[in-house]
Length: 214
Image 1 (tube, one colour):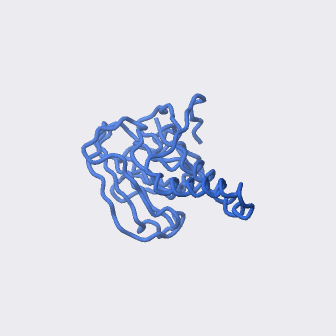
Image 2 (cartoon, one colour; image 1 turned 90 degrees about the horizontal axis):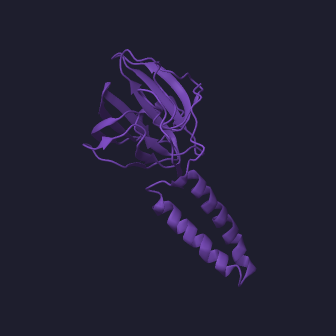
Image 3 (tube, helix red, strand yellow; image 1 turned 45 degrees about the vertical axis):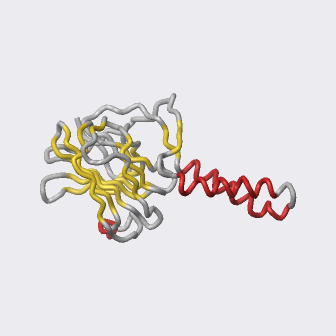
């Protein structure tokens, strides 16, 4: 398991793309809190709305991070769900993101985004083997290692994937590239000849944990 960690001076902000969910919830919580001062019955709505707002602030946190060291860094916070050899010689590392993980995904390597393709599909739980057919966004990066493929996969709860950058954008390693609301799964395909430095069950930190073996 990697010993990489978030910088002790990490600052936390909210992820881009959460306003459509957070803004109305926070507004409703504020309004019912004011009304509860006039009538106690409003507290029955104010308390759960305040709790929901607090939960969303936690779910959609986006901490600043100091990038780790390695040719390929983890694109997602989560747990390594599987490591599979692919027919073309690459190795797929699948990272499961739970609802309590940070949902912002980061570039595994510095380079240029060559394509961002949205693929329609289902919404089965991300830990299910059939999730390969789920709604997803397929990324390709032109890097010093060649073409690197990353796939953001929606799950049963996370039904919206939000890319932050379009094709043609140059990105730094560990730079934010997109968001999956409420978690799910991110697959990273290691080029032929590159072995993974993680094993199934390892926890990963986006932009920090090294994925390739030196």
